[in-house]
Image 1 (tube, protein in one colour):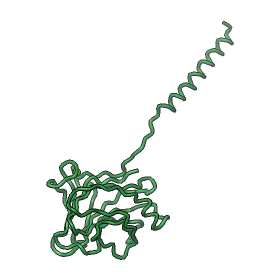
Image 2 (tube, rainbow, N blue to C red):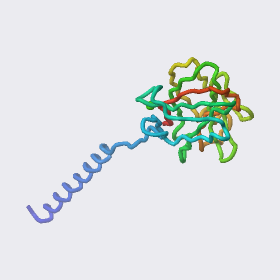
Image 3 (cartoon, protein in one colour):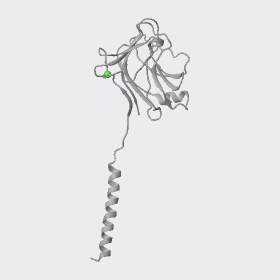
Image 4 (cartoon, helix red, strand yellow):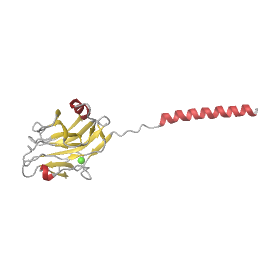
Amino acid sequence: MKKGVLLGVVFVFWACSMVLAQQSFHLTVPVMRNLYFVHCTFEQEKDGWEGDTWVTNTLFERDDAVAYSGQYSMHVFVPEVAGYLTIGVRPENWSLDRYPYVEFAYKIPRGTPVGLFFQIAEGDHWVCLGGTSAHNHGWYPANDICILIDDNTWHTVVINARDAIKSIDPSYDTIYEFEWWTAGNAQPGSQFWFDEFIIKE
Ligand SMILES: [Ca+2]
């Protein structure tokens, strides 16, 4: 075989190999997706949840006597005088478009005021997406799409927070905090539990 022909054959073989390699590369690269932005199980710690006891008259603790999954849930309660039954979590850079769904399990005794609040800007800027029939969202805008059942047994719910919040104002796209809250009408002894709190695609 002449030298030129041999070089041509080698070149064609190399070119075909590169094409096949590229096709193989494109076919085998996995799509990396992070379905869960936040997943709180409370099995090891409080998973970032915080509260201001002295202002809200609300206490909270991991509870190993009542759990939906594993051994622990989060127990939220008002000890002595009326309170706001409130704690919250602040995931950084929570994009509603990327992570629109909020899911959790809850156990709420009858008559307990539990509300779901989303902070849509820094400062006192919140919207409410519902809660139990006894919840009071006070002076904040609300779209009460989520109705929580207060029968003291475990239930789960999934909320499309993006669509509900954008129905209040389409410009809202970042959430700074999620909070349980009611406008000071939680009587002493009010309590509830939640577990498997998830923010997801
Ligand atoms: Ca758990």
